[in-house]
Length: 299
Image 1 (cartoon, rainbow, N blue to C red):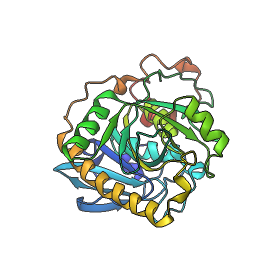
Image 2 (cartoon, rainbow, N blue to C red; image 1 turned 30 degrees about the horizontal axis):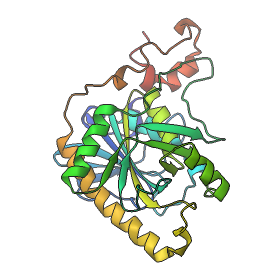
Image 3 (tube, rainbow, N blue to C red; image 1 turned 45 degrees about the vertical axis):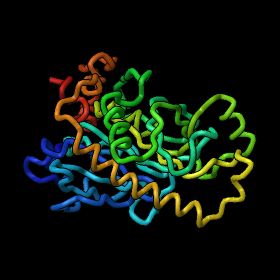
């Protein structure tokens, strides 16, 4: 399926190289100009919402609200494959993900940001690969985020005077319930840094789609382990969420502005040694469904 069939305008697939996925508290992208909304159809169904295309800091950007505008979709209900595939159809080469997380460490305080370099998977019921149905691929995932893109995000936080922690592990749980106290204590013993419900699935699919992926994890609270956590009010948590969203907008603009045109990472060749199945044996329907991802590897 081509971007044109998905509803993109002529030439848009090559010009919109930056994607932003907004999580809790970030349902729109301030500063986008010349915007238009695009409903993208994919072989994996409908994305979470229409993609908003526009110009940010002089560069073409595609923005998607992960949970849909109005926060209508549970973490386990998100059609991650459609979201990432839609970005691929538009020609996106880099995805910046923004999400609210809970802190598992005292020195990672609400209102601060973390740019994680590792993930740990505790999800249970999600489709987290594009492959199957007659085609096998095993991508390398030891380093699940793009170092170049993560570095730009870290520097953008510093530039905008937002306290950022460079590197850390994001544990991804199924949700939608938050952790029990026992689970939180185990996660702390395993020395995880933050906890969330979405980003790992996106990172896996972005790697398969050969798209760079990095996360701004906005710390909202201390999960449930902190002795003072229950004394915090809902109003305080919402205030932190709003502050985080405002800071994320500033950081995103700075990151897009400073992002170099050329990719110096290996994300764009993730499938080069990952495709296992003899292409002559791959069903035609599977090739068609995965065309946007495997087009450089099929004749």
